[in-house]
Image (cartoon, rainbow, N blue to C red; front, top):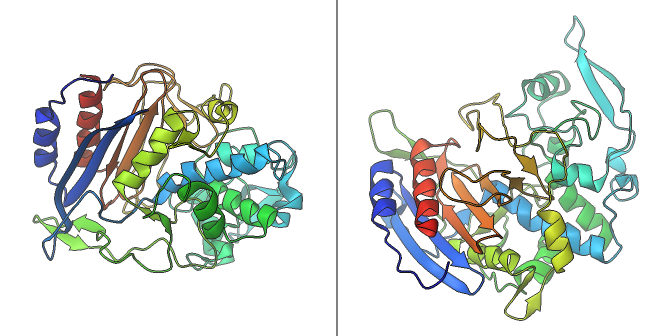
Length: 381
């Protein structure tokens, strides 16, 4: 994959046609950066230019990093993948499964068939969900009371199925972050900074209590054209959201992609063993199909399926495509995204990865997806 000139004409043409407020994109291999591009505005209302280093909320791209943090503690014996999580997360002891609602609207519950494990949380097979994806969770909150965003109550809910029986995208990685805190006695931001971000020289990545100075604005399209600012910030709550609370930059995230391509090491600093990296990239959910997200709130995220024609799997933090992707990525590549239309992939077979960062709601914007696809095609051209 190395040593080829990068023809970015298709990518830049697609990006121009996408009508995004702004974006930053990078391609990397195990040895370094192959391509960078910044486009448009960090704040399209005030005309602030987007740069490669503009801080952005990476939302659910947080999950992969926090999953690495958890796997460090598994290596150290401080967390177990397959023991019940009750010891570190007593709130998840004796889980209850939601079976329906009675005539008054009250939820009907039964005890879960088995306890929740860290592996369930990392693979979104615990039975948990998201209120903006799953209407039954939204209905449960309508009866129990809508929790304050960023509160610990916001990740407490009954299960939708017995742990291990299905795959549904969820707050599971928020609980993984809380397990890291319980196992270490540290705040998640401090643990991640010392053990993941500092070794990878990700100096502009962290859990913040307010938007970073110079951070990109989250935008929403106006029907008549142009954009309005969307005042959404995913940090600053009662706990650091392991599922979506990080602010980062394209270059910082690209360093993480490089470390994963190199088997858990970058610049002489090892954050994870090669065996653990390989385990994270192995399908953990058997015959369950992973990756499809429905929607209970399309103004936040429309229904989404990265590979509707594939029986996609899930590793310990990543979507896994079992066949070659339409834009070139190899079978067994790892990927996911953030709700403000940011995306990444890691291809261990070809030794290449890419990250595309934008700040636009709702999730699944076709222009952003087209642009990310063109970035990927450029990597394999």
